[in-house]
Image (cartoon, rainbow, N blue to C red):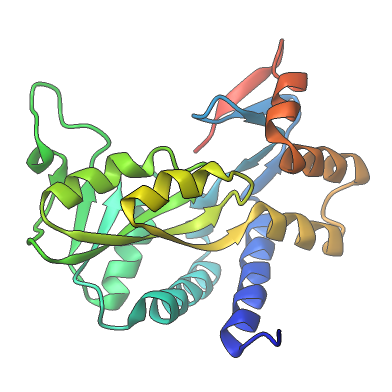
Amino acid sequence: MIPDAWDIELREGAASVARHLIETGCVRYDPEHLCNHGSGLVSPVHLEGRRLLSYPAVRDEVLDFALRMIGQEIGDGELDAIAAAEGAGVPWAALIADRLELPLVFVRKEAPEGLQGYKHRIEGRVEPGWRVLLVEQIAADGHRKARFAQPLKEAGCDVRDLFVLFQYGIFDEIQEHLAPLGITMHALATWWDVLEVANRGHYLDGQAQGEIHAFLQDPRRWTAEHQKGRKSEKAA
């Protein structure tokens, strides 16, 4: 099948984002200090997407691509608000809301201590029937997304879409977690994009490329082989 213009732009945009992530130091290969994920897996490569915010020209280019994706895959004028999931995605949600001139709300992982109910997990104004785009920085297996979507849905919001700067692209479980919620994932790039750009640009030596590829092909096996007796750092 011949790819359409948006398919071509998607591939080019993903490669561009991957290159920016590498060249700004967001991607860090460190087999001595493994990245520890909430799912219990560990990996030899870290992603620190917040570093992109320190490079205004790169930040604007990535944001332009994000807005193109939102317009193409969700639709211009379809959204009523942007919801920032508590964590590293907050600044990206704020930038997107500002560009689209939409209300911004903040969603907590949990209600503050001693309080219960969705109202205490949402900071800002939302209205029943509003179509809300949930924004995070990274998606791995999607197990946390239900926690952020739940209070918005309980408030009567229409949450059909999740936008992330980066999706791991290696966990089938992500569809299992998002499909029952009726949520579609939109991601600018994946680890496969990063690895392809790294290989093409010779950013990593052969050993690093081999280890990263081995992790991506079978993250659970890689974890089992490397986790014992190694230091790890929590994923951002």
